[in-house]
Length: 463
Image (cartoon, rainbow, N blue to C red; front, side, top):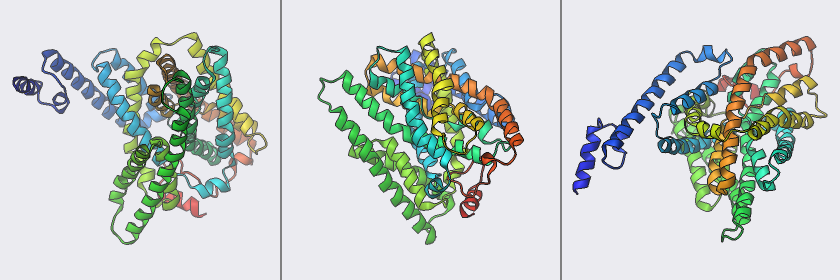
């Protein structure tokens, strides 16, 4: 009882803030640690507010938001304002929440009918290019890590395969680049993280099974349940949720004000339901988004608006926490082997995979090279690596996580610095080509471009 009273008083002496109130214990050292964390959060809040004031100008420069927030997080890590354990704990929470919401909403924006009708480029890059990238990536990793198990090499390649349009925003929002090209990159980045996830989970399970073959866990059965029950749970929740939403809108039982709450709740429901029945929650969130979007057909504006507004804060926060909690440790494991794998993935694996996947299409050689380079690795790569680490052997988990984080910050730097110059060069070359496949008008869109309003997406869908 006495200890409890002392703890309460100590919390009050630490200014009575919510952050301090969740601290356990009653020592002066813990109060001081809480004060440091409060100061760190204050700095982050002020920095985010200041960045928002100049975000438009910054987006037109070589400095991207991911670059800035990763760098700022790393600089704060040197100040010791955020205790390592606290930063990692917060990162795990933010990582899971961000991944659940973004997987669901990215998938919900996809118009499956339009995707099947006229999206040869992104379909080829997704269904042909990604498997090739995983195989080539595993082969490249084997050259530098010949002693690693084959499943671990395939796991590394799968983690490095997804791309992130947020790191190439200067490209997908540049109106000088033909709309068909920008849409191909947007559709690919919106779908490839969800499509890569089954491969990541499969190879993570197989890697764990090899390391713990004598354990009681049947890793093949576990992986099968994750890959089968996850999509099932997601489709059921997403389709039912979409149907209920449209019914409620027809009977004027809900309004746009509440749609966002419902969409996020559905994403969470799909995740938790899948987890409850033994499936993978993240695959469920992605499948649920696809089913939800297929049912509502663009009649939920929140799906389009969140990632362009409030969702930015979630994304920026995740990049900041990566720089704060994971980049310092990743740099401690940085080596010539790491650099070789990262550069091979960026400069050889994806460009070759994309080039091969678009063979026989009307994409020009220049466009194939452009697609091959502008596939930056971002949030999905980092979060997937972070989330599979607990499943596999520590001797493999630590270098895989470090490799993924080093890939993200190097990609953010290289793709950020080259985005404006590369986009300008490509746009000028395409303009000189005259009428070509790249400049063909878009009659239907599987996913709206960044910055496009929902009603504009509807117009494209109706054309």
